[in-house]
Length: 340
Image 1 (cartoon, rainbow, N blue to C red):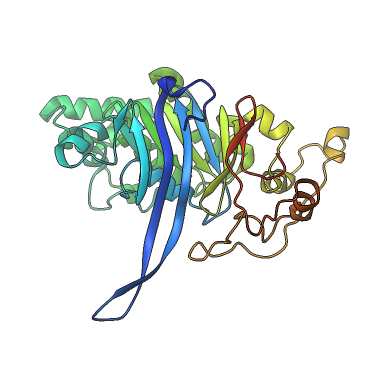
Image 2: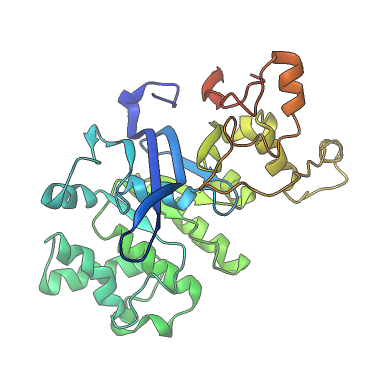
């Protein structure tokens, strides 16, 4: 299923019905499979070359797992992941390693994602060594160049991660991702562990690099203000499923899914005096997010949805029983809700 509105032929990355289940087992010696944690449950979307697709949702909804499953860091339970027409889920060994040169990841925690026993030169140069791109003096010069590109002193090449601040460490992570000149980068909440002042610097760096090298991003975050700034289109995720997908202007102007409306109503108001901001209605959701090990039978959001009774009254559909289809209700605006 293509969800970019322009057909799959223009998509750099195409994800169709992606599922990532983690088995639940019981027993110490003879373990038996008693269920699954449905971290990602039937996700479909396309990412066009050169664009930034923002993936938002509350903690635990499956955003990071989706990113890792796309890159095959987790091998998906089911579904299709195509990169430039190549099916990644069936690739193994050398074939997968060759594709990984073109798809990279910037990890969430700049403190945990860098090996403390390796120098900056070794960390940034490791992808060049793994993919047999450069060696010796040429590799060292390339590492210096990469550090300069991300705004770090090239003479830091012999220092260790503990000698850097959080923002500098994240720049090292960005340099490592850029080393093999990828086409597609999954940015897994790359600023959530940083101070606010440093967040803006890293966002500006990512935007500059995208323009300079023609990169394509999947930008995972839960900060809606940041996602609005950097993304071309935004996908909203809840309990392992995409509930809404459209361009950023449409999403913020006319959110359709009740969960999206609740998310946007929680964004801090920059100008409370403005009439448009005063008219915004705050939506406070009741209850807790269900367990991904035992999601609701019908709509995943039905246990907390303020519009559930409206769907039954207007459409005659019981959200507790019938799962909504993820469909295009307007041009390039996809939503999974019985109201549309």
